[in-house]
Length: 398
Image (cartoon, rainbow, N blue to C red):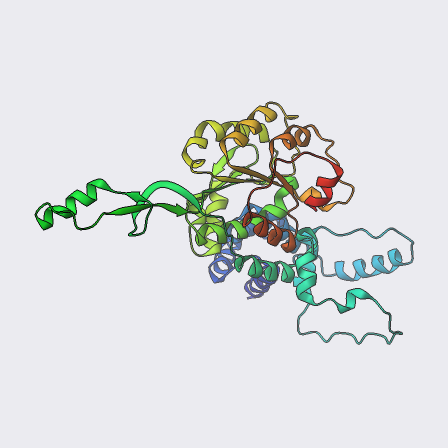
């Protein structure tokens, strides 16, 4: 009974940390512990992770939660004593990794009474006048807690991506259209004994252009890719002709997986389809494969391409410039979204970034909700002139 209760509490901890752990995973975890040696902590951790975690990006959070929950009963007292000793030392504060912050918040008892804050003299600070909603818009995805990530996901689901309508080759009947349809006119005249009483007219059909997204899922982009997948899922279910590709060390088409209405089902299917999550980055090789296998299929009728990557190529930009040039010439508009632009002192020093910059139309940051809204606003306007990297364009991109 003690093991069952502990497994149930551990599952609740994982849910509070933002992991999709339900009754099925809890029952499977209890059964898994009956088939291993409980004296081995490694076997217990491996068994629980095998049945309770279904996505690669959740492993870090699970490891942090397991280390905190299944620990020595005296470890909490020792950690508290060490914390008191460390507090007396003057050390530069370090920001904990995101997984640690999420697990720490989930591990806190939500029913515990909060300590009353000590009375301090009021401080005039402009930050205090900003609402939580505005603060969430400007907060970096990397710095968000578990609850803030959930709020950000809700905001992302409300975003609507407009694209300007483009004329296609398809004609549709329109009484006031500029083009005359002779075949339909003659066919309708047969009903009147060959007498032409009206002239059939057509107009070119307009529809939004295709949207193609190439998203980097390497280790340096892992946290941003997880949240941006919610944006891509909302866009894929909101409009037609959206194609999403993920790449790290290889290229994977996940358009069909993201068509699932339920986000959790869609992301679980994506995790099974993508074997190289949080691995290395081979941008040039991925773009070469896309240009050879997919460009002619999806880059028609003035397609817009969103390239989401930090530009840090594992292969040292081998063949990257040529493949970027081909991708740029095949699309009507190529927009590069880079989370590194959040830094004020960012400069294109790496070989990959230097090889990619001359072949993009826009270079924009993508690190918070405000940057996503700015992207949506930009896509609803006409395409700007080709980008040239200058300090002025750097400030404009921000």
